[in-house]
Length: 267
Image 1 (cartoon, one colour):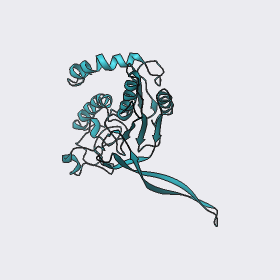
Image 2 (tube, rainbow, N blue to C red):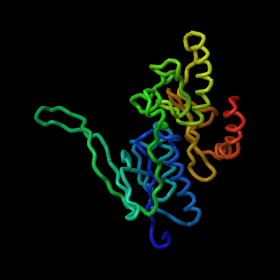
Image 3 (spheres, helix red, strand yellow):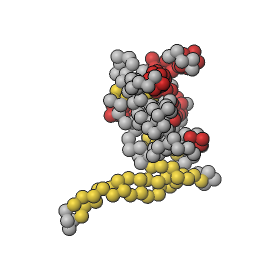
């Protein structure tokens, strides 16, 4: 098919927090890089419920620059996948957006939420599904309005049930659905559980650290490390630049780190 026409390819990102927020873009970049090396091309559509590629301006700009190195990549922001017709190869999205409307009679402005349905044809589609905690938690009184474990974003202590603490991607906090975050959660809740059991004031605080290793091509990664305050690079390097060093780290070091350090509680 690629030799007779340019295939239409869609990559989606849902309207919920996901485990590893950069995963949809990783697939987009690696697919585009693979096809390019094989002398093939595609009409890529990155369809996301977000209003930008990344929350940090420097990373957002860098990802736009990465897209410019590939065949045509069209971003469709604030689009959420509603349904898919596999037989007809059509995907239906809800485009939700805010529009400023002006009342000419009174001279006032108002932000109005609007939405419309968008149907897109495709030859291949990569879908990242909406995500949530496990049913046992969802059906309990432990979740908050966000739909996740209702813990304080600093102490990781439950806001209502004080003898409960959260760790990992189940936590309903602004950041933290990564293994890197869970590694930082561990020491915080260890100390705070000890403090709680000793009837002391909780003394440890999570700074929001998370890390998103975004593969921009085979052999290079942008290692986006940040916390509640902004960029939080481990290495004294420009964190928005794709580097082979981070690819090697991801390929050769992360697995033994998980197996021998993180899962054993040593790191």
